[in-house]
Image (cartoon, rainbow, N blue to C red):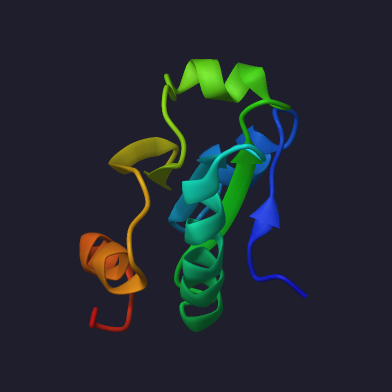
Length: 112
């Protein structure tokens, strides 16, 4: 079973904006090669940091309302949402170590 959940326009508010934990949202698309590279990185982060941070993905082609609301213009874009607010945004593919460094203050385990 995947540690990364899928969210939609309909479930985004409940799963992300109203979450009591930080949520890392990956905005992605089927046609995006870098998105395929980021997928395993996010799976590993979600599994290792389960309980500290939730990781979700939103397909921009199937969910235009959230994509437009948050002004996502490029994929992959990863937004860290805390208390309903975007506190960090990363555009483009990153290695696991690089992404963990950027998110270190929100992860219980020190970054690599």
